[in-house]
Image (spheres, rainbow, N blue to C red):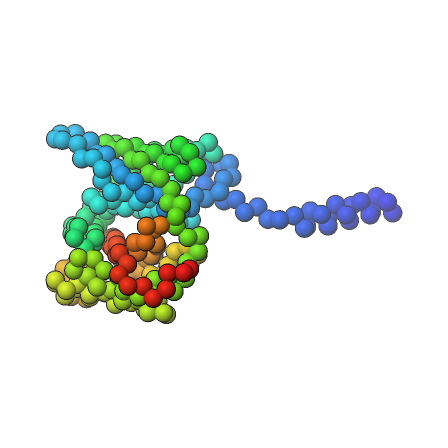
Length: 254
């Protein structure tokens, strides 16, 4: 009877243990938590010929097992693995920009059908710092990024309700997350819907009367700790990155 009681007690304790919340993101099979959050900083690019380009604005967003590397000269989307010691290998598809509007923070690119994946080696130098390097056909680059600790851990539609702007764009978002964006210079129009997903927004939108990236697409939106609202959308082999500054917001409390 005593033996039976111990067996039943052991089984009850085992059944009540919390599930393992760690995800496998390693190449070695060790279980480590998936990365999360937004890192911002710069890339210094050293071409095989010509002068170096330093200080390229760079964002790195981790969403589950997907990484988005957004730069003002090109973008990358892909996956990553970890070695459990702070080492990260990003395996990314490059998107070469065909349209760059720096006045309005609109970047549109495409991935070549036969494009080879770009491997980027990164290290978590500290809790808040990530450094990375890579070598490509056109040259090599060194990336220095800092975790955006000012971002809210959760968001609501109320924090983005109101008007947003760039040099030539005006955007209005209502309380339900419905938005309309209009470019007063070229009449490009984007309308869509945002919904909350943790510290991100699910994005669906449609662009008409635009020179590139027209039609329906889906993606995500995210706020930076400095207040800018970003959209990243993909359609087929194309990518769109847009960034807006707050103009007049209805409510800034999450």
